[in-house]
Image (cartoon, rainbow, N blue to C red; front, side, top):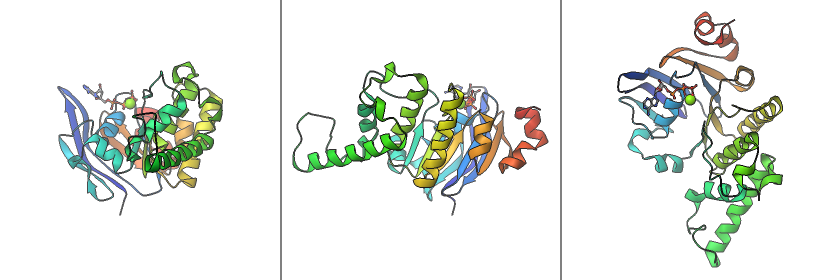
Amino acid sequence: MPQLVVKDLSINFGGITALVNVSFQVEKGEIFSIIGPNGAGKTTIFNCINRIYTPHRGTILFQDQDLLRYKPFEVSKLGIARAFQNIALFENMTVLENLLLGRHHRMKSGVMAGGIFWGKAKREELSHRKRVEEIIDFLEIEAYRYQIVKTLPYGIQKRVELARALCMDPFLLLLDEPVSGMNVEETEDTARFILDINEELGTTIVLVEHDMRVVMDVSDRICVLNFGEKIAEGRPQEIRNDPLVIRAYLGK
Ligand SMILES: Nc1ncnc2c1ncn2[C@@H]1O[C@H](COP(=O)(O)OP(=O)(O)OP(=O)(O)O)[C@@H](O)[C@H]1O
Ligand SMILES: [Mg+2]
């Protein structure tokens, strides 16, 4: 059984058709990429999975559950986390505070509410802090944990955004352009982290990205959109040599 099933997804905004009958399936443990030109509908797919948008047609199943019956916060409770194309952090708070907030849906005792903890709440707070510290180590952002997010270089903010999503311990991670705006070194680091997350944590990843080196390096399979329609799906080697994909997106 695939972990994520997207079937016949269609949505339009006024006169703009953003997605037309898009279908694909993602297996548990896969890195599955969605590529295509600007405006092709990639982020719209994430917004439908996240339930920010409601498609006009189609179905989305996650671990056999019909996501269209859920609200956005319920989708994240099911274990789907997302790192946004536009960083979605609280920029006046520290890295650590952002990451603790990233775990809030897992907290039972309203940890961030006050300053006084005891008993169960205290123990829960400590276990969440421990997990957050593990993720900080995993993504090598120890040096920034007490810094205010908006003071950090953009590439580090992107990594904190990734860490925030990871703090939910998701089964499925949606990454929308995780290396956009990064320099070569930051891009290589992020590609390595994506592989590490997938291999060491077993997280299924759906990746939207314009950097074709990263996409071709990390993906198990790739789906290509053009003007809201799926025009190809396959292994990196197949996609790279697909004449339709070359014409619509990759160029020579
Ligand atoms: N809320 C909205 N209202 C109106 N139009 C929208 C909305 N969301 C998306 N669209 C339109 O749907 C189309 C697909 O947009 P989407 O953001 O999914 O593209 P994308 O593939 O993610 O592009 P990019 O690579 O530039 O991020 C575009 O024409 C966009 O303008
Ligand atoms: Mg987009």
